[in-house]
Length: 278
Image 1 (cartoon, helix red, strand yellow):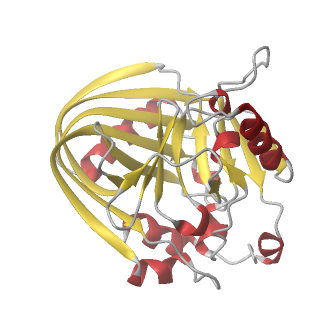
Image 2: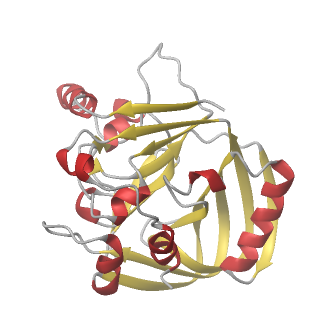
C-alpha cells in the first residue's frame, strides 16, 4: 500500500488559471489529467483531515478543477462548509443546507474530500435492506473477507425506499467547530421511493486520526435534485459495486489556520457525532 503526503499550495491556482485560459467547465479538461499523463487509478486521494474540519478548518485549499485530476467519484464538502459534496462519474454535486442541489463551477474550492477513479472490481445485487445498520453489516462482512486494512470505495445504484440525509448551511468567519455547527445549522431531509446513487467510503481502523474509520456515505438522486450526508436508508433493489483501492495520498492545506490546529487531542467522539448525528 502506497502512502504519500502532498502540500497544497499554488497547484490549485495553476489548474484554475489553465482552465480559465482554456475556457473549460466542470465536464471539460478540468475533469481529467492532460493527454499523455499517466494516472494512478488505484489511489484514494484525501484533501486535509476530517479532524481539521471538526475544528473549523472550512477554508478551501483545492479547486474542483484540480480535485478532478485525482478522481471521478467521491465525497467531501465545500469552502465555508457550504453543503455536502457528492462526485459521481466525474460530476460534482453540491447538496446545500436549504435542500437545493447545484453543479458548481470548477473554480469552487474544497477544504476536505476523498476521491478516486472508480473501477468496479465486483458487483453485488442487493434488495430488502431495511436500514443503514443492516447495510453496514453486509458491507463489513465483505470487508472482513477482502481485508479490513485496505481502502474501499463503493457505489450503490438503485431504488431506495427511504434516504434520511442532512446538509449544512454555509458558515461565516470566525468558524465554529463542526459539532457546534451541527447543533444549529444543519437541515434533515427524508427522501422516499427515490432512485439514485450512494457513494460509500471505507477507511481502515488505523485511519481514525486522519478520517472516520469505517463507512461514510453520501447520496445523490438520479435526477440530481436531492442529496446529502446519509444518516439512514432502506434499499428496495440496488447494485453494489466495489472498487478495491491499494494506495492513499493525503494533500495538506497550505494555510495559516491549518498550521495552528492541535491534532494531539482525541476527537473520536466528535467524529462519531458528526457522522451519525447521535
